[in-house]
Image 1 (cartoon, rainbow, N blue to C red):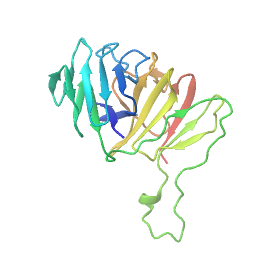
Image 2: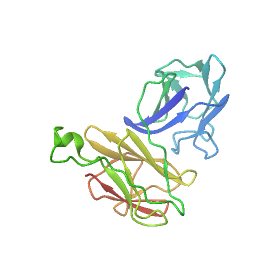
Image 3: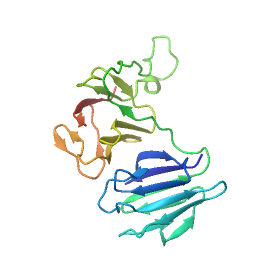
Length: 219
């Protein structure tokens, strides 16, 4: 199934499956692909999908829509094409290649605390310890989901309440970074609102999103 991989400053913030004939992209919350940034128009572009083709059409946006660095009005998309809207880059994938993504970690009442981080090495393990240490986790500190832990084992994990506030945590070679995905309020990191640029996370950092406190724990 065709997909869109949305990133900013080389940090992937979301993945969207294209499963409708018409998929809208823009800043307004009713779009199928919401990019909450002033450089993106409220109704910026639309993706048309037929049995054989996928096309993107600019909807008269203020800053334009670019495919492979060229301004377009309407253009067919091919596997690997890069769409640019403002500072955001959206990679179009038509096959199974690409990153692994977690589903959004949603906070809601009655959610049972999960388990699940990678097992620690045993004394008889022959695998080098660095390969078997638990990956980083997000630990919920407040609200109905307090005590829940989610291992950050995939490339991207999204957290929050869709339609209210969503952020992403992307695993990179040098560590994990937090990025704002959607919602009017920026996530807080150690009590301070983050800006529009992704923020590197350190062990013990406290993230506040949609009224929920979470702690980033790197093993």
